[in-house]
Amino acid sequence: MLEFFSLFAGNVWILTAQMAPYLILGFLMSGLFFWLIQPETVGRLLGKPNLSSVIKSCLVGIPMPLCSCSVIPVAASLKKNGASRGATAAFISATPQTGVDSIFATYSLMGGLFTVMRIVVALISGIVTGLLIELFCGRKKQLSEIPIETVKKTCCSTPALQRPGLIQSLKYGFLKLPSELSTALIVGLILAGLITTLLPPNWFEGSFSSGSAAFLIVTLIGLPLYICATASIPMAYALIAAGLSPGAALVFLIVGPATNTATVVTLWKILGHKATGIYLTSLTAIAWISGWILNAGFDLVIVDASIHSKHDALPTSLWQHVCGLALVAILTIGLSRRKRQNGQKESCCK
Figure 1 (cartoon, helix red, strand yellow):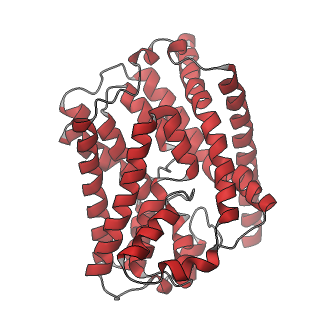
Figure 2 (figure 1 turned 60 degrees about the vertical axis):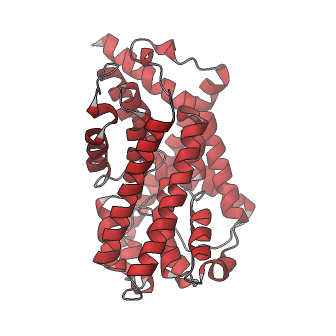
């Protein structure tokens, strides 16, 4: 039992140390991104119901570190500032799949090719989803009809896009954003450590590694669950270490962050059942096609299977260990901050 806990703790720490430098850099870039954005130009850039607005919406949303619940109030703000229906739908589709923080974290564990593939798929899925909803759903139901209660009840209610100062932006990057990600990221690292420790190499074999069965399984797991773009990365990495193909892991990283039960219900209310069906169908189809392309077109090796047997299988430098300790401190402060804010909200509601 002691050996198991030692191996488990070692695996969790390896993943944490490897992600830490890139994730900390991602937090910094996230803060700077919110400082540089010009929200007053949103209506001018995204207001026309055409391909250009949809593409611009995706390009704005891809680097934003918003999860699939916090994207809803921001999307409402975009719509209020004049964004078109298709552009808003594209933003909701593309934004939760990536973010500056998750892009750097993906690179730290999966490498450059996988990271580029993830960004490209987020862009394509956002464009396709936005255009299809613009074409087939007309103007039956607008996001401006979102009840205020829907926005208030989202788990990470992000304020309307208002340009903050530099200090406020850095506080967002290193305090607010980690407080929103801390629980999910810690759970993701723990689950990844368990998967890596318990599942032997090549546990996924044959069709359960790269075929339709693997894609279907990860889709069914990812669709209803809340898995944020950053916290899903160590879990996908651990599944690859157990034999899951990179393509199936990509499907998991696309479908998981962009959908969950709460998001589907909210989309049903604000966009209607037809748009929600288009959203889920197009997103899943693009994820599967991307997974097949990745498996068929690239001989991608991400994980050394020896990670299952020894802690030094993936060497970490002193710098990574230092950054790992810094990341633990940031997440701990984030947890404390979120707990304190939740306590204040509960006391205000009494």
